[in-house]
Amino acid sequence: MDVTTLMQQLKTQQVQPLYLIMGTENYLLEQVRRAFKQVIPAEQAAMNVGSYDMEQTPVAVALDDAMSIPFFGDHRLVILDKPFFLTGETNKNKVDHDLDALLNYVQHPEPTTIFVILAPYEKLDGRKKIAKLLKKDAVNVSVAPLAERDARQYVESQAQADGYQFAAGGMDLLVRRTNADLSLMMANLGKLELFAVADKIIGQDAINGLVPQSLADNVFDLVTAVLKRNVKQAVTLYHDLLVLGEEPLRINAVLVSQFRLLLQVKILATRGLSQGTLAGQLHVHPYRVKLALQSVRQFSQQDLSRAFLGLINIEAQLKQTQQDPELLFNLFMLQFTNQAA
Image (tube, rainbow, N blue to C red; front, side, top):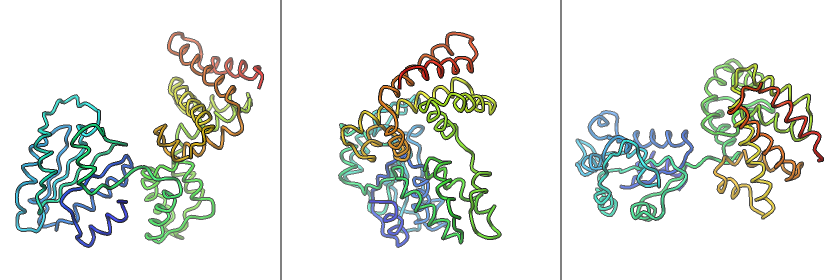
């Protein structure tokens, strides 16, 4: 089930006793949490809503709550947060969880309790019995990161509902500034609307002024300059990042990460994999894969490999020597530029 369908059902009080909400799109996850809480009347919430962090609280405590009858109401809402035991992760707090009791509850849920498991993970450990059972018996709702098109539509719909619209090129710029991350887009929408309260038009000037450009966004231009062997532009961009206060190791780490992604996409794309499949296999946002696919068409795998290895060498020198970061980057650019394309 998708989030939209779930929201429609909750608004009409069409509830089930067991839900599994899984995915890493934090904005949608919080929207779902809020929607479930609104099912319980405000005057009953204090007695009939319980939320439990599984990294801090034993699941037995939540189950005790779930098996209690509602207090002067039709339903009790119990939310399990961050159930790490459904994945291959471990918890440093070593909370003792009675998973046999949870298994029994999933098989025999209380009909008057809305039992919601919020799992902010890409996937569960399919080898675990409890994970298999939840996949089969619970209402499964995905809050995975949205594709660029869906993120655009979501934000535009919200803006229109608020009485605003984007000027020409405005949405494109917001997507670039946020890498089509829905949580970032929605986090910035409020201040953009406040800025545009007079005419209700969200323009590029407002986005340029209010939405910060991320290091990854700046590095994307730098990567392009490197691969095009534009020494002057690459050196200038690198210098600008240092002036902005970015740490040399952090800049280099983002560069290495970007070139690693480009290499992976270049190699895997030759196997005919789609953008969505690539994003899933590489565990990165689909928008980043889209940009990578556009870039790698212009450059050879050999060039990508040379740049990647050169940046790995810079990282080693930054960690082992006191050489000037700008000098190291300039030397890298000269060496890379002089290599045959």
